[in-house]
Structure formats: structure tokens, C-alpha cells
Image 1 (cartoon, rainbow, N blue to C red):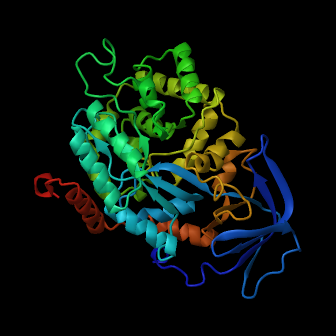
Image 2 (cartoon, helix red, strand yellow; image 1 turned 45 degrees about the horizontal axis):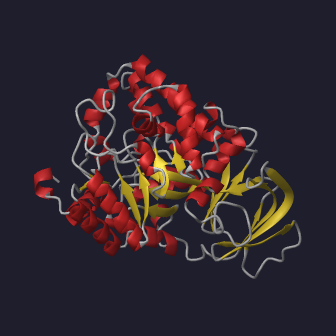
Image 3 (cartoon, rainbow, N blue to C red; image 1 turned 120 degrees about the horizontal axis):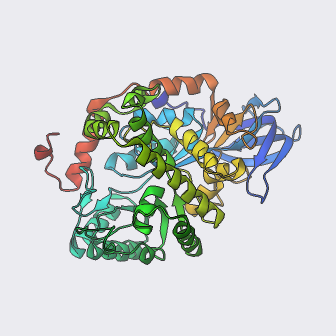
Length: 461
């Protein structure tokens, strides 16, 4: 298939002629007309006025015809279960993804993508989610409750090749502090849900969490995930605008980036509003069947949830996102795609729409999925902009997304690590994303659970 068969000449020289370049790094966005871009070995090596670049021998020439070029999009929160979903991201202009629940196959897959053996977006991954037993525990979480268990888990993840840790809500104070200390010692970064400590009766309404949200703000999180989790932990689930503004100011002062993932709760709400019909909308065919089978209980629950209460909650989550933006918090864009009913690729475009709906201007919304993501990942000098020396991850658009974000849905072409994918190829990638290999997915999961020490036989896998 096209998605798994790389072109031997994919990293040859490429010239994009006569395009308008969208620069987002300035205080105000800027477009520069009639430019040519030379791409060699996956990098942008020269940008010059149209007609000034002499194409290298055997270079491919693409006539831009005045179309707009911008940096490829970054989805900072996805869940990849199998390589079949990769094409759906590229088909929506997503050229970098951060997988937030690592398995051994992700490390191999990232290497294959980087080498050009498999066509896909650049893949960054955390290790397996570290959590403690409690109400938010899931089958794929690596459970640690003591400091010793936590240190052993971090060391094993590092030895396996992971360099990013994801933490989760239930973590005990003892386990979390050991994770933080060991990760720091090994040079590993941390992202995820803010750990709350052991859950006790009456939390959070009557008594505070064992670990206060503010305690974690100086712990060096790359990103804190999910605006609803911030409201739950940081505001003890109280929908108070004044308190929300104060919390947003604290997050900003701590220089912590936030990944709101508004889309994740939006889709829960849509399932409730439609009594489950939303689960059958176009695009859901790209969701992994094994994930869908395991999610049935959650689908049933949300099909019966209180619509008005959750609609009001979502409106508050949008306001909280706007408060963080107003306070100068570095916001990045993530879709939580690959779980529940969050479809790969297209979900990020909806996430950007929801940020705009929350009151953030289109230029700033575009920054969340480009330069802000690069800054949060400490890679601002190598990707996220249309600039010489940067990774050649680019979108060729028919219109300007700073005027209307809908322009992102009219891709002429995508350039991923220097490889040009035209509209026909993108359509093919999207189609192939619905061709699942359940047996391979199951092998991925079994390998992951076995490496974490889980009893796979008891889990029925």
C-alpha cells in the first residue's frame, strides 16, 4: 500500500516555486509573496524571491501558482494503536504527532518514519502511562504505587529507549515524587495529567486533593494536558470565573505550557446530545476496531449522560481556555485522537475551530499547532516555521487560514520531511487509514502489556 511503501527518491531535491509564505512567529502574522523554497534531504535549505533559485540536477519542481505555504501542523496529544492510522494525520495536514501512551512498537515505528521506510507524520512518543490504582486506572497503564516501583518503571522505560514520561491522575505522592526525581536524573521529560495523590471520600468537594495542583507548577512539565482536568484538579471542579482567572495567572507565571484538548470533551458532549448517533458519523471508520470494541461501556455511558450539565461544563472549559490565553499561557493544540470517538487527523482541525470558538483569534490558534508546539518541545530552532534550516514539514493551501481556519481543509499538498504528497496521494492515505489490521494491533498491545509485567492471559488478550 502507498502508506507503507516509501519512494526511493522521496528525499531528493524539491523546489516549490512562486508561493506566498505565511510567517506566524512575528507579533502579527506576515505573508511574503512570490517566493521559492528549496528543499534538500528533508530540510529547507534556501528561501529566495521567485526565479532566483537554480534547481539542482534532478530536482522536482512544483509550481505553486501563488498558493500559500505554512508550517505543517502538530498534534500534541494522540493515541496510535497501529501504523494504519498514520495516513489520516497527513491527509489533514498534521506532519508531527506526539503519542501519549507509548508501546515498544512506537519506538520502531518512529525510526521507520524518520528513515523514510514508512510514510507518516514525525512520531514523538512518551513511554507507557504511569499511574497508581484508583478511579482513573486503565488497562494499558503501568501501575506503580511505591517509590521503588516508580523508580524501577522509569529506569525500565529509559532502558527501553523512551525519553518522555507521561504521568496520570491517580499517582500517589510517593510514586510521583520518585518518578519526578528519577526522570530528572536520567534527563527524561514529563507531561500529562497532574497527579492528585490517593483519592479519598469527599474529594474534591469537601476536602482538598492530597497533592495540590499548585505544587506541580514548578516541576518542569512539558505540557499539562486537558482543560477539564485542570478545572477538576486546580479548581476542585468549581466553575468560578474569578477563581479560574487567578489559576490561569498562576499557570502563566510558572511558564507551564497547556494542551487544552477541548475536542476530547466536545466529543463526549456530542455523544450525549445525539444519544449515541454521533458515534456513527463519517470519519469514524478510521478508528481502530480494537479500541472501539473496548470502548463500548464508555459509549453506552455517554449516550445517557446529562446533556445540559455537560453543555454548561463545556462552556466553562472554553472560558478557562480563553482565560489562560489572555494571561499569556503557552497553549498548544492536541486532539486526544485515537481514543473514544476522536478520529485521527480531522480531530486536530476541529480542535483549532474550538479554540477559535473560545475567543482566540485565528493567527494565535495557528500558532498553537506550529511555533507554540515547537517551543514547548524545546525545538523552536528546528521546526514549526517556514525558515531555512528547518525541517521541511509544510502545507500548500489554496487560501489564507488567518482569515478563515476552514482554509486548512483545502490542502493542495503536504510536504512531510521533504516528501511531497499531492492531493491524490493524500486522498489515498485517508482511504487507507480505514484499512485496519486488528491482529497486528493486538500484537502491539500484548507486547506492550507484557513488557510492563501485566498478566496478559488474565486480561483475555
